[in-house]
Length: 162
Image (cartoon, rainbow, N blue to C red; front, side, top):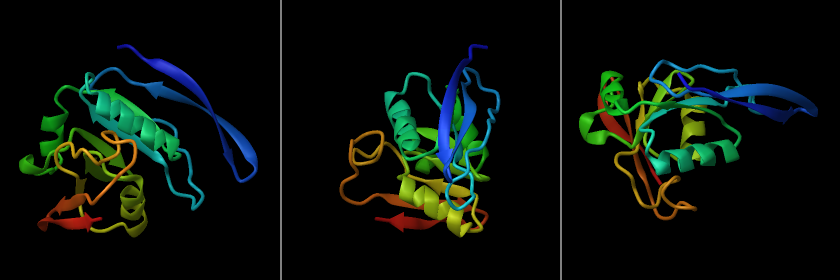
């Protein structure tokens, strides 16, 4: 197992807090410290991705730029893990993430992630299938619309089309 450890400082409510970030290099479940957002919720997200996928790293960087603490887990079988947790095979994105008990497949924009954890719908997660050219991680700025789907016990439905 190969791990890289980073020291991060985070200013919250006028105070400065330090934490360590670990970059896991295996397929074991990764967990790390949580960084609270202004509303008191978690901004911790774990991403299982193919280690050779540059857009996944760009997407993780995008999340970090938006205040998320990202744990990256190298997993060449993230697609199998995705299907096991309920992502429809025809709806797979380029990586799988977990945030506050929800699974997220693909390059979902931050505003949609934040709506998901704020609204807490009774679903397993959401997916942005494929690798849309206008999604975060593929484009420097989102343009046009992206259709994100919800999945869970009630099947598949459109979650967001914006």
